[in-house]
Amino acid sequence: MTPTSPPARVAFVLFGVFWGSWAVAAADVEHALHLSSGRLGLLLSGSIAAGGVAAAASGGLAERWGTGRFLGRSMVAWGLAALVTAVVANDTAFVVAFVVTLTTGGLVDMAMNAAAAAAVAGDAGRMMRFHALFNAGALVGAAAAGGLLRAGLPWRSVWAAVGAGALVVAWWTLRVSLGVVPAAADAPGPMGTGAGGATTTPGWLRSFEAIRSQRLMTLALVFAITAMIEGGIDTWGVLYLRTQLAAGVLLGAGAYCLGQAIAVSTRGAAGGLVGRVGPRWGLVIGAAAAAAGLALEGGSARAVIAAFGLVLAAGGISLCWPLVMSVASAAAMASAPAARSVGPGAATARSSTVSPAALVGALTATGYVGWVTGPALVGWVADDLGLSAGLFLLASLAGVAAGILALIPARPSAVA
Image 1 (tube, rainbow, N blue to C red):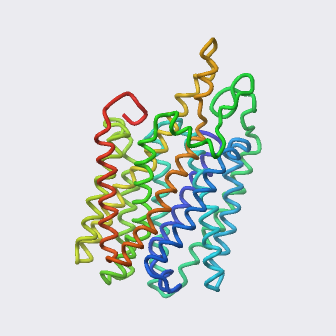
Image 2: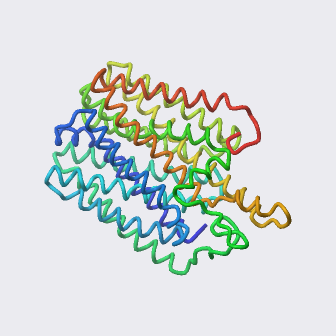
Image 3: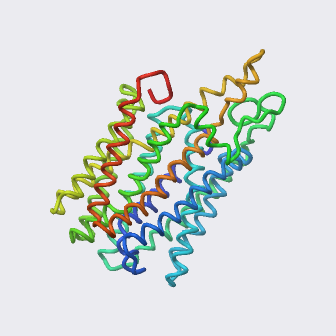
């Protein structure tokens, strides 16, 4: 366990609380700002796009500062932004603060995944347990927001608590990172450079080359699709129940909470399953379950059945993000020994070395591409054809993701 593992675990929980409360309160934000589904989607897409750019651009900082210091400083920025978003009254100020919160949230997302990747060293089961903490937080956030709304109290107090908690975690992270020295610039291995000063860490514009060099292009495509679906479930799943099927806030929040509870148990106990079938088939199972659940929710006129579909979709898609992160960590760790080789092929080996932070950052940015596309696309379809059509679109994309991975030949690779 690395020194920053405990605060990183709490960061996963806080990040989950934020997104869980958003899942329940998205309908209230839409109503308060007088937005259509399409405009709400554009707001979310623009905000997440900024977060994705921030995640892609921050790989170099994460390695220069070390993942602990980077996580701590990111949590400071995110915590302050969340506090401001929780208290501003003006609609325009809320939108600006919301965009800043999601932008800095992109930094936190990348930082906590990089810290987790360093801690688990490619172990898919341990990475999934890290992400189970996100779902546990999402359950708490959704339950808290639902309870506050039911009682007629301001749900944004959840975000105030998240912001305050983030500042505490930032202090904790920076404190435990004081004695941790980032890898030296001339150190071989995943966090430094090879002998002779040849850099082994791509910059933010070169970080996507890391995906190609590790033969993870197909995985990156599937990851973008599944991230679009996960973001769609978080935003549109409960909103559909509350606005289209007239389900009460307790049913909507309850269905989401049950889905997150299943995600917690799935991610917490799926290490054995993934060990037997491999990350690739774990992703296939998760995407297929999400497709079935979304189709059931979008196709049912009964709120209870649609809520069951939301539960199935949330539980299935929960497998995807941590499996991708574990594959990234394993691929980077596998490339590290090559940097220590000597002889005529050493230079070539060093050039293929990729740091976990850089690869996680690149894949996180790829996931954000899906998050960016999803809200705007589903919102646009919802404005023209109805939100149920948007859910069917997400279900179709989940089926495509499962099909792509199922058709990959079982060759020796990071996802086989």
